[in-house]
Image 1 (cartoon, rainbow, N blue to C red):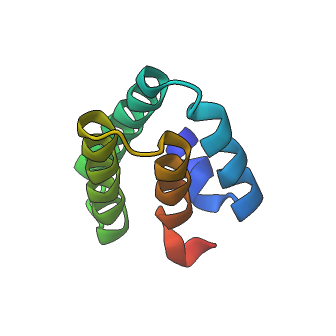
Image 2 (cartoon, rainbow, N blue to C red):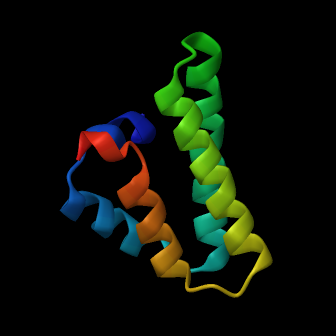
Length: 88
């Protein structure tokens, strides 16, 4: 549900979500895990390139956050602004 609404949301909404979900590393990772699972469920029901690219980007961001000491909010903003980029 959140993944589908994110697809249709504007830049301001995406940045607000990134701000809200980047309070702690654990919260961010859990949220991305949930998004990945949602995307995989959508892909099983209706395979398409849009959700495949989104899943890859989420997995890449998850790995980056988990394995490095990167700026958490910047990584989340980058993820949300680049998900479904053509929709913005």
